[in-house]
Image (cartoon, rainbow, N blue to C red; front, side, top):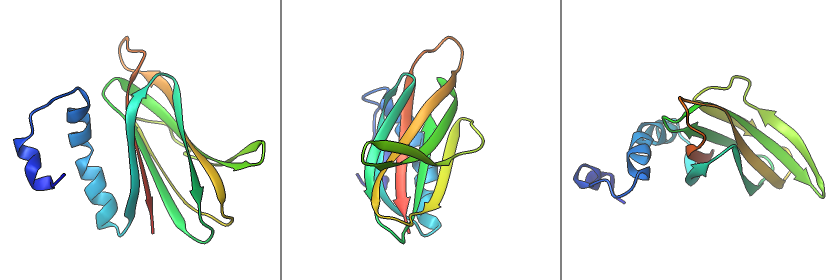
Length: 135
């Protein structure tokens, strides 16, 4: 979708305002010289994960955020080796969004995990964005 078309969009679902509000972070990532690999968006109730194969010697980034119903999230990257899963890196401060930048020293399967630490008001679910990027 061309960015020039955005002003003519009419909200068709409850996702669209959340997606449009994510455009500044996408622009910022690209302006800093990163290549966006993938964007995942969906409902979250508790936690969600995405598994990806990452290549040795590359620097990757992972950005996660929640909509207005999510007050605080925690993001982690885990390394999967066989039947073992080990925490590779965790964002130290939880908040409404999280960013993790890391270099992969060994090609393999990695799990990107976001967990809702707290919801705003009386909510028990919300929308999330996960943006994967690399240099």
